[in-house]
Length: 321
Image 1 (tube, rainbow, N blue to C red):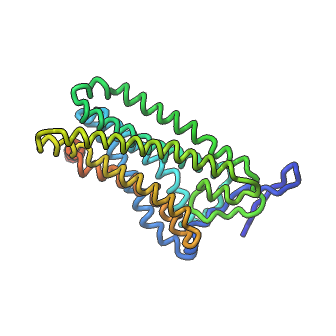
Image 2 (image 1 turned 90 degrees about the horizontal axis):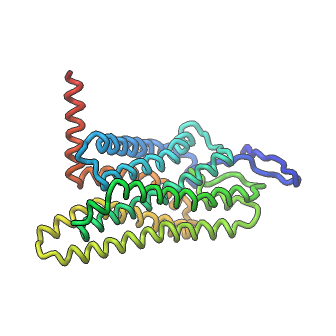
């Protein structure tokens, strides 16, 4: 192992780079996982770019709900791109080293994009709540200005609250081990290498998770409780079915997202015996939702399917010319 160290003014050794070892316990054959991960990454990029292009091209999709879907697509591309190129570089080129600055930057980006995704799901839940519970006021409440304001507020919230995560990690002293049994710079994976006390790091990480993701999750499910209560009061079975169908794709995705968050958190707490499980789930949670989100919306949203058909029909017509 090539450990790179530098000497500080206090004559103490300081690690100058980390080594991302990949999946613990399967280092010898982990490169075989690169193919499915690369395919998932390409699917996430292609599907989300298609969502963005279709929304931009189709004037019928210039509505707040689809603007929020487009913002979710941008966040998904950012999340997947934050981790997948480095993971594939580890598997294909054995490029395991990462500087402290790059590691802390990745740490910030991962936490920021994860929180942003949770925030966008909350905004989409509010959109569906207003659309179903206050349909007559929907067009005056949920406007383009509303989408801009909630998006900027989520960016501000997540951007500012996530800053202490890499800052606190950078303040720790890394004087011995520099090997991280992970494919990416996770908060606990990095700070566990510190030679000094990391209590404040653990506390802030837990507080951030509860305040951001926990509050978002609570508000999302509260919104859907109100939606279900409102839908059950409808006299027409057809109206009830139509109202529920408008929420089905969003509800599917938020159930998957928050269930995955809970599962990843639990496996991190109970992952000492099989450390590969939380690492694998952490990576999959960063790449599967970006690949899954556009597919679910494409399958369950008629307007988006029509937009795809028109887009490909236009492309075919132009190629014949």
